[in-house]
Image (cartoon, rainbow, N blue to C red; front, side):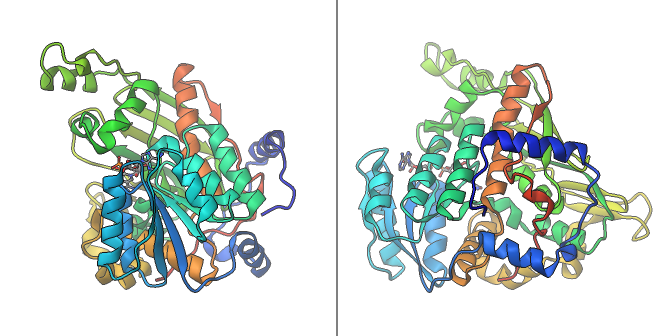
Length: 450
Ligand SMILES: NC(=O)c1ccc[n+]([C@@H]2O[C@H](COP(=O)([O-])OP(=O)(O)OC[C@H]3O[C@@H](n4cnc5c(N)ncnc54)[C@H](O)[C@@H]3O)[C@@H](O)[C@H]2O)c1
């Protein structure tokens, strides 16, 4: 990372130049020179360590699942846990000791007790799965006190917070990783592997989304119901873009040869949550009075510096089957999710999709082959275990992370830019170049291993 931290205006100049000079040739993973690879590793790697000591902040549903995973991963130990609810810290202590490890220190004295954890504990990593508004405060406290930081998604909800993560990671020279588990799902990894083999030709377009009926969950009187619905009252845009964008951004070499340049975004009217409250709560219940800013279907279109297009959607307030879309399209074919299928010109029958499951043996990403058995039964079909495993492996071996702070910022920036665009009737919004021009020389993500 750079010694000098340019100010935020510098990025505008560099970003502007990037648009004008948009004809930078597309690069593939094999194009990075040895010097570029070495420079990249020097910027992003931290010294290796034998055992990763972890403080876990926010041990609810998803944090709890990570705690269970980490207990099973060699070379790491959860030595401190923090939650505002003592029943959850009690649960985490029991879970860690049940796995045969010493009891972790407990921090449950209110919403800023993670600061005491960061200041007091000797840790290598602080990992958070708190509600969205707490991700950045926890990570900033972690990096300031000399720890690497990792967070659940999205990493940040505002552009200012995206910059705060970047500036802090550069200043303290710490990893600041957004844990995008969907990058590790088997169809996403297989599509990435096939992209690297050139099977889809030059990629030109992608689509992703988070299309998940969360109406019941948003109105629950526990877990996400206690905080997620509030974001639907406050923001109109795509508040959860990273599951859909993460996998396709990797295929398109975002921040590693290309970058998100601008976005337009529009939202449909808001009906789903109001209707759900009317149908499920009695007359006079306060939930029936709630008003929601968030349009039920938000559609954003991102243009990259190289002129490629990415459609990203958010729909969590309407009845519908689950999908993240997961489509990448190139000059020779395409991959599409839900159901997972592909089409490659000259392979199979013209005009006919091929079921992705039928070619898994041929095109499965090596990491999936290596981890399938170990990850079986873990959260979200095993992908959560694989992402936690990679986090710990990279820290232990001093390797660059699969996702850098620039990826955390660029993917999360879609939240704020989509909200701004929707508010201006779909006006284009510039997406900051958090890399400050280094997207041109950063080598593409390679095929990683267990
Ligand atoms: N990657 C995925 O597939 C996935 C799935 C579910 C949730 N998530 C993400 O995980 C995060 C948590 O979601 P969840 O479903 O576990 O929600 P949850 O409400 O079950 O868990 C959040 C936990 O954080 C605790 N908490 C709240 N404020 C805190 C604070 N200031 N300090 C310490 N603890 C605090 C709560 O008591 C709770 O235990 C969110 O960012 C969400 O987007 C990701």
